[in-house]
Image 1 (cartoon, rainbow, N blue to C red):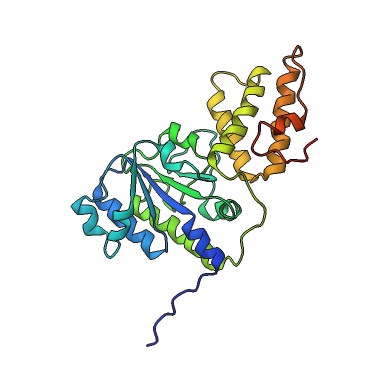
Image 2 (image 1 turned 180 degrees about the vertical axis):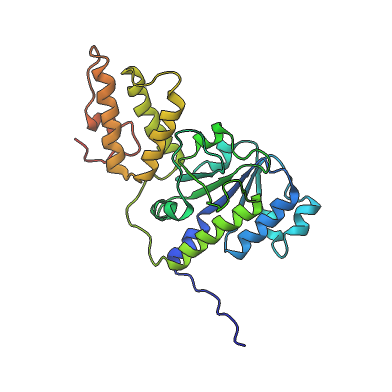
Length: 273
C-alpha cells in the first residue's frame, strides 16, 4: 500500500504556522501540556506559551509529548496573559461557556481574519485551564472568541483535544493558502490597544459608557477593530475621529489637525492633512 504523501506548504503557509502561538493559561494537568505539544507538532506548530501553572519540564508532560519534547524545551513560561500575548496582532480566546451577549465565532469563521492578520503580525490562540476555562477578564482581553461546537450541548473537550482541533484548522488553512493579503493591519496588540483607548476616552467624555456596561462595550469595540484589520491610513483616520470627538465634548480646547495628530501617532500617514 503506497504511503500517504507529506503535504507541501507554500511560503505563505509556512509563515502562517510560524506566526501562530498557542497560549495555555494556568494549565492544571501536566499530561495535557505534553499532549498539547504533541498535537502542535503534528500540525506544524512550534510556539507554546504557558501562563503559570504546569512547568513544561514536568515528567508527566514529557511522557505525553511523544517525539515532541523539543516543544516543551522551547516553551516560554510567563506570569501574565498580557505578557503571553504581547506583540500579537490578533488574540483569539476559546470558551465552552460564553458570557451573556458575547459574540462567538467557529474556528473556521475566524480563519479569514487570521489570514489577514498573519500577513504582518502574529496570532495568539488562548486556552483556559481544565477546571474553569478562561475567566471573564481573560476573555475580555481577547479580540475574538471562538467555541468548538459539539453535538451534545453538555459535552466538553479536554484541553489537549481543544488544542488539537485548533491546530488542525490552522494547519488546514496553511495547506490551502498560497499568498497572504498585502494589506497591512495594525502591527501589534499594543497599537490596537492604543487606538481603542483613544476612542474609549472620547466615548467616555461623551457619556456613552454606563458603569455596568463599560467592560462589555470596550470588549466589543476591540473586537470590531481587530475584525476590520486596519492599515496605517485607516488607523490614523480613526485617531483623528477620536481627537475630534474629544474636542467636541471639550469645546474650550482647540482641535488638532490630522497632520498634527500624525506627529504623535505611529500609524498616521506622512501626508495626512
